[in-house]
Image (cartoon, rainbow, N blue to C red):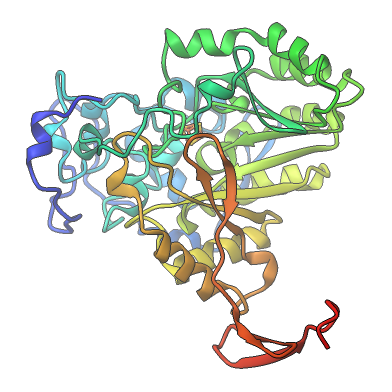
Length: 436
Ligand code: SF4
């Protein structure tokens, strides 16, 4: 990736002194601010309402206030319709600036100076990016920053070497018994740290890479060792139910495919996608696991809770994946809140990823030491179920490598010395190796 003029400027830390977006000439913005996230997630007056299509939807006061303010012509039925959310997603910075403050360096993004990864934010997710979200934690994960134009020498467009481990278009085959099946280049909302930013949101190259479903399915059929297929992309839930059904039923017909998985961010960024019809489709293809992508406890809204409950009530096992991001979620208390909150909605925290060295993401990456410290602050201090495995997806295609704090303090004779979560020493008689 080429460096741009803006790279000469020093990256400024997030500032809390920017003005909130004001009324826009010709726009329909209202001056009142929505309530802060904490106030809204704590609100008890969440209502389950008829959405006009015969389905019950939870609508938080926050969403409702936001809809009335920025989409006053839309009714509740439209807001709860995922097609409406998709059609009305924000894809232009000037439109975004009518709703929230841009990032401090956002003014540098115009004309040629635009990141490779397009941006798209659902109206629902935009409702979480309120002006009081200082220091812009959530919005930094989805709003483009000029820092993306400044790749570092160690960063790559395909850090996991997926192109090199792709035997046919759409398939990444790295491990012996499972494959990654990239079924669409599209997402409800694009994450600024996306490992697959070389493909997602792209109309040309991306579409080609994702078009060859038949070839990909034929490849899986010919590989009897493949017992696990992970559908990803992009976000597979961007596909209409009929296409998903087609895919899942073709994969289910392959005798050696034991489990299916879908990686999706829909419950966090567009819970309206989790319709009863979708759930009815998915539950026919069990064992089917869902890997949900969460970043921050502010995503655990009443709407997201309802979406996860629908999936869990249908018997679909739910796990979560979180990318560790500087200035967004690299805080032990914050992640503990996220992971404990996920367990409450029946989502088991599964992986905490070290951010991959993708071009233009250095401003979002923490040190590995920081990740280890966070795991140390979780392990033993909360339920083991709330502690995901911290992994580095090895650059070059080496696969996920777990990184853990070291709890082994040494050996004395046949006694293994261990440090517990409080740093106290304990000895374990490790004498099964015949040393005694
Ligand atoms: S949802 Fe997943 S595939 Fe889509 S932009 Fe985010 S990380 Fe990338």
